[in-house]
Length: 89
Image 1 (cartoon, rainbow, N blue to C red):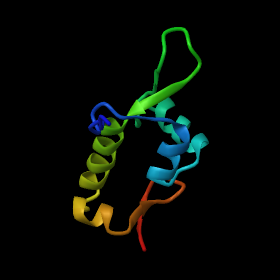
Image 2 (tube, rainbow, N blue to C red):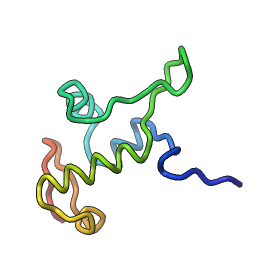
Image 3 (cartoon, one colour):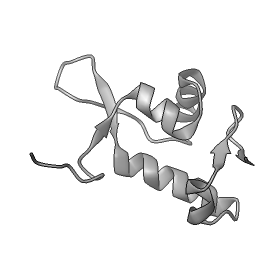
Image 4 (tube, helix red, strand yellow):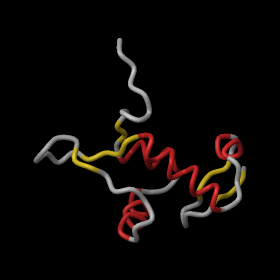
């Protein structure tokens, strides 16, 4: 079995939503505002879209850094609220 690294692993909206703790409507609003990576079509001309896992990880880390939160705290129980702000458990 070949394992993909995060750089080549594609995740879909359901997984992105779960990973960053935001509803799809909030994610789409952030995309429209230019504050979240845009998804790409998985197959040319197809309907399915997704993100590289590494792009989502980078967004999370940069968001945390801009708020002065270390990456160790992000994995240790800090989550985004519905309005895109970090909350600790």
